[in-house]
Amino acid sequence: MISVHAAVETILSQISPLSGEEVPILQATGRVLFEDLRARRSVPPFANSAMDGYSVRWRDVAQASAANPVTLQVLETVPAGYVAKRRVGEGSAIKIMTGAPLPRGADTVVRVEYTESVGDHVRISRVDGSGSHIREAGEDIRRGQTILEKGKVLTPADIGLMASVGKGRVRVYRRPAVGVISTGDELLEIDERPRPGKIVNSNSYTLAAAIRESGATPVPLGIVRDKRKSLASVFKRALRYDAVITSGGISMGDYDLVKEALGDVGVQMQFWQVAQKPGHPMAFGRISRKPIFGLPGNPVSSAVSFLLYARPALLKMMGHRNLFLPVIQATLEHEIKKSRGVKEFIRCRLRNEEGQSFVSSAGAQGAGVLRSLSLAQGLIVASEEQTLLEKGCRVPVILLGQQDLLKEEMGF
Ligand code: AMP
Ligand code: MG
Image (tube, rainbow, N blue to C red; front, side, top):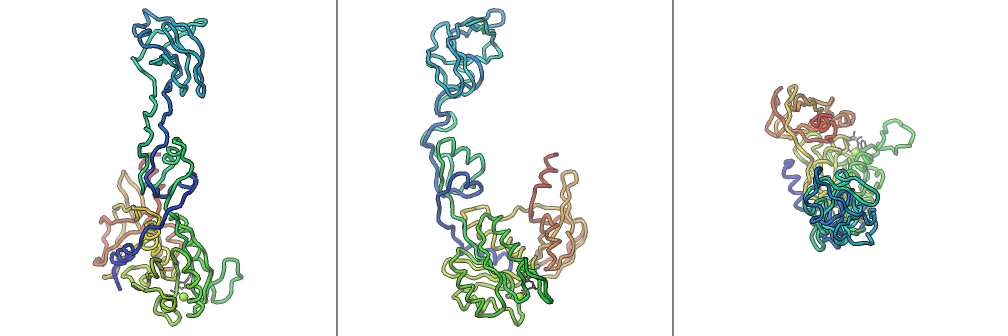
């Protein structure tokens, strides 16, 4: 039996990022950039007005004031998307809209609020300074400049940034295809009629959903019965994918044959027990560079083991550097007893009071009680050496979702 820490280290040290693939930028949100990205164009591509107003020569308007307004002849109006035909010369102006290219001869924009239109002239009674309200060409991005670095997790702003320099496709790390297998003679498909002794295979759904949430692609391979030969033949098929996740069949029962069957198809097992609760049967193996996760059968054990071990591994395969869920410190609202020698992950709910986080159990902690995991906002982490967590002590909590907490902190 190895520690949680050693299990995570063992797994991650054997995982390498996958190759890259080119995708349309709209499919790249949340994915990791596989290349440094240089701008092929400058942004803005041309000098343009930051205001609705009049483009002028500074020296014509420098003295303008309410007491001494300056009057200029308006040659034309240039909307965004068009280029002025005329040139701004002495004593003249071109009316300009936000985003329109600065006309030749002009060096300053006077905002419309400081002006009054008088026939085909404009009276200017205030100015903001020489060169004001002009966005220079290349002011945001200069052509050839690196705008996004390899390893960046792409955000909506990054997608827009790429669009602004005319980049419609981008290379990102490939998503691993992950074969998902549930093992057990007791398992029914979701639409099968209930029968004595049988339960629905929920793990395939929990795991496929969690895989998808991580950004990887689940490939459900169905239910396999507890027979070494059947297990081995499905495992063999599963090895064409980038990673394999099984659930069930790795404890000490007479029908727990997953470990043997993985051995039959050439998987080198690295460990199969971790000092943790829930889910101490938890196997990891490898065939060439492909990781195989043998998760426990109990629904909460498999879900929690996925988060602790498979999720960071899949993220690393997808080029992520930030592999772990966020952890906060919170004050425990009641005592918790545990056994020495195992790390425990306790499903919990969080409460925020005057900027302080308080944490309490989310309900029954049995390894099969999926309902309390569904209610949980986090997992309290209790270390191996602890046997009693006292009421009022500060404990680390792995956050499972943070929307409602953030909302409170932001005062919404
Ligand atoms: P095992 O590790 O195979 O002994 O399974 C432990 C417990 O988890 C048993 O109660 C199983 O019935 C249950 N279990 C195993 N696989 C699944 C599954 N795919 N969906 C729901 N429960 C499961
Ligand atoms: Mg089983």
